[in-house]
Length: 364
Image 1 (cartoon, rainbow, N blue to C red):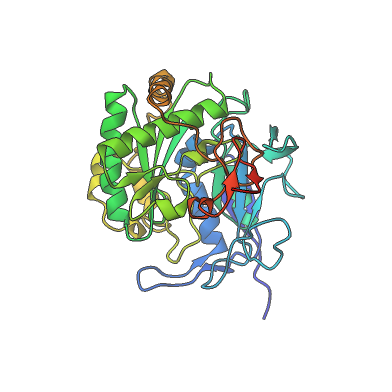
Image 2: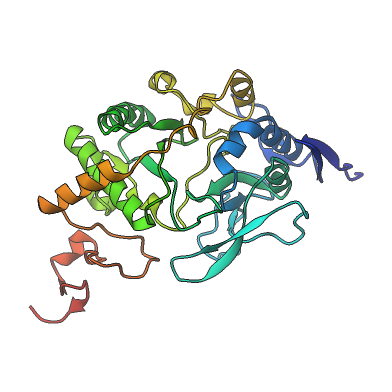
């Protein structure tokens, strides 16, 4: 069989070459036809304004699936996991076009890297040509990569809960943000969860933004018994987990308008609050349906209009600490952080003993 000729996709003022345009990236489902590599690139170009609102001038990691998505395919869990079909690209790939710009970022380990920094829609389209489905932007702009300009609230349904539960909790979260004088912009995760973004002034460190997320989650759990900030899965129960650690350095969430590696090519889709309240199946928002929504206007068009102070949430954090709350666990790949509790599952504490710094000690 003759090899299919490359296709060209118009991306702003540039044309981007797409090789193997007929490669099937998503197989057909009972709801959607199959999706080719060319269709993915054309989708990225079609949602360009909204996607660039999410990615523009931000260090961005790429979630690449060069062979597409199939049942049983999985995402690599580390640099030595060479058998996985999907992987994260945190550095500029080889062969990048000369119009692609980069920015240096620093990982929690102290190592640095040059990461893609999209400045025009041709860059994400080229990334799609390289097998990228999901874009993972940092919550910072390249002018100041150490001070986030976004608070990200990740509502993650735990076993026994559903997307509908996450939508209901999101409504409570929206009311809490209003009470704090903040405006949140919600979107589907493209899977079972809901994300809410708040633009903030880039004045605070990552640790401050994380504390703000913890404070928000704790207050939300006080208002709604189906919410938890418990880091250990065994303590979460059938509740919606507020994943506060998504606000750490080098922790990212699928961007608005990103495709997700799930059957049917679902999209992490921006919503108005009224729209979100009526959504019952996030799969309705996919590569085939979202471009028409964008043509009618982006629900997040005003997200950059106002940047809010984080102080109301930091004041709430201080009050919670004064009332007896404490620091929560960081991800396991982080160095031990000040005030962090022991990194041991609560069920194991009964049989083991730990000092004040979280180190295991012998004896009783």
